[in-house]
Length: 158
Figure 1 (cartoon, rainbow, N blue to C red):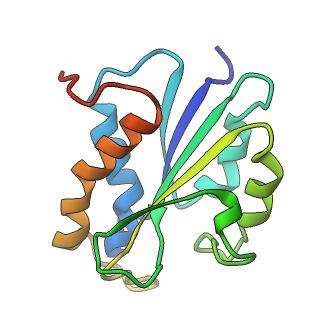
Figure 2 (cartoon, helix red, strand yellow):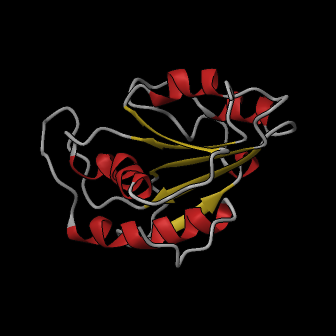
């Protein structure tokens, strides 16, 4: 299958503290048996630029993006966003590319969900490897949430 039916993408850079949340969640999801129609991708920092090459509105029906998002909550708090929930210009990658617009264009043909975690500390441009405890503790809850979003039973173990 060239284009998977369900794509789960973790965005972020583990060199900048809590910005590594998305890749950390993908690492945990990768340890689980997932259906063949699901592709999990550690998109790293460049994810927003190439994630759209993994999608085909003819065959991809669901996109789940996992990333940090500053929405003013306590660190480690999760929030689910739809593209229309994102104010214009509010969701940007580290290179200031506005992701709201391309997501808005895709939302009518692909079910898009953004799972955001409130970070405690993002250190860019200084490097600091490792997530804060609050964000680390959000990883299992995020895995559970993502598995529910893609229709996989959470109790499935390796």
